[in-house]
Length: 152
Figure 1 (cartoon, rainbow, N blue to C red):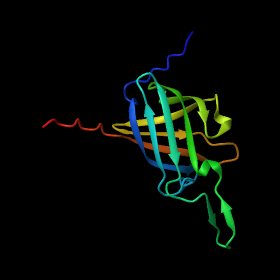
Figure 2 (cartoon, helix red, strand yellow):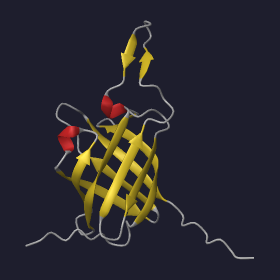
Figure 3 (tube, rainbow, N blue to C red):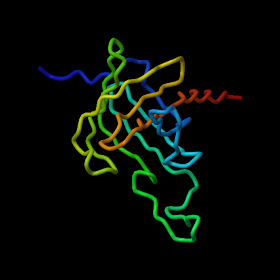
Figure 4 (tube, rainbow, N blue to C red):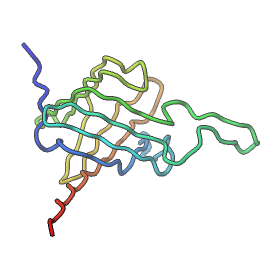
């Protein structure tokens, strides 16, 4: 039986990243992409998507308190992937069928994430990685459609 990838109209469109952070078990937050990440999520009517999150206006390295140069991990610079997604409103999960990703380990994977959709705000959690006490949270705002240009 073929999988139905069509997305409910509620996710179709363009979304702008509002926040990306790690939520720890003690309810504290850390910001692997820095304090002001940027991103876009595009979802078409058939469920094809493209997602980009970038460390906004930040260098790829920094200097620590002792003056040593530290390089950011690749997953602290960008998270990008595309493929198809499906939404299950009954279980409040969104499933990403990732075709290609910046993180090569994600190529060809299927990732299920719990989500909350409230009006024009979408948030979901990426489950904690082995050895981590945090889930990654992404919060998106639906972009307002452009007003059609009026003819004079």
